[in-house]
Length: 443
Image 1 (cartoon, rainbow, N blue to C red):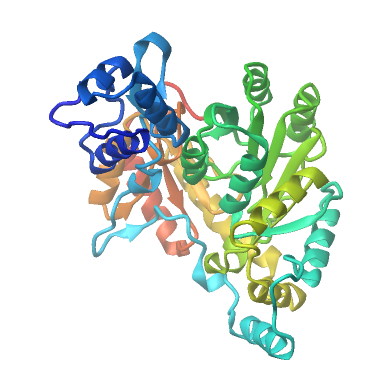
Image 2 (image 1 turned 90 degrees about the vertical axis):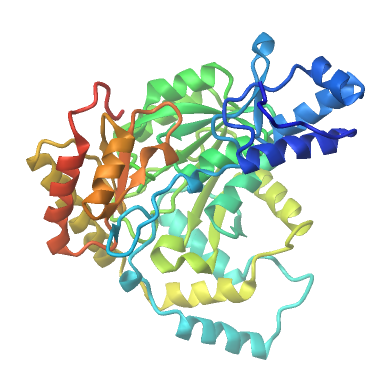
């Protein structure tokens, strides 16, 4: 059951920590069966309630899962082993197309924006007790949301998309609640949900985003929240169009108590229009990070939502970091007001690379997906083999396991740094590495 590993501890916290150490070091492998609670209690000489409390803590942290009489097991992808560790290290001489980073050449220089924020700070230093959201930041963020048809709501600021999503989930849900997530989807989010003690429910996606019938099934089965990527979905490049938005709003309308969280990280570098779902349910949030368009290290995401949700998030934020640096908020304001990013030009640059790779793969008989953003998703029959063969050919691709729960095997390719001359070479390598088409494909 546990091999040579011995779970130790007298208190629930010690027992939980012992299990987490075993998982973190690899001594307790994913899927491994843990001892029944009463059996472990006898072994450790403690009350069964102590072990039950330890197991409950581990479930809430996303380390283990319990399946009735089948017992408790280490999760297949426990929160202590992040999906980021499922990667291919690119050795010297290998072209890395596995990372989801933007093209540094398309990011604006930050020196002037930071200097402008610093000058303002020197004139009037920020102090405790001031509003957590800079007034100009809130005004500009709200104006952009209004232009895209996002319902009215107050504006908050978080340290990136994942921080905002975590805070929204935390103020509405409890450990054990089910959350519908895209599959394949953003690996960090697939790690976050179980780490919060929530139960992820996979929702199939196609090029137009989450499939309405899959969302409806997840909500009928009790999912209390749905997380959706509006554009530039990671890893598939899916984007929700007008018809799909109408269908999804109809599904959500039948479940008004569901928490809806939309991630529009594509704002600023994607040319496709936004078709928001916000307002279809009572509680909702729309999150917009500046990471991909302006710089990942800015760590700024604007969010809005229904007044209760935003108030809860800001209230809880005050008890932790207090606020996100208003210096950085004002730097972003400077970037916005000076037009530091030419969104159509950036979207066109990514689109030419992405569409060029998709077309090159299609000419070689390879199914590929990438409607928006900077990623291309390629279903394969043998994921490990495809990744290995690509590496041997001089290309480091991201294994699809980083992004999926139940979805079919695939590889993800990030096109942000590709030069035009590299596209055909990469397509040729993928065609040679992919092997026969998978029996069941994307969507």
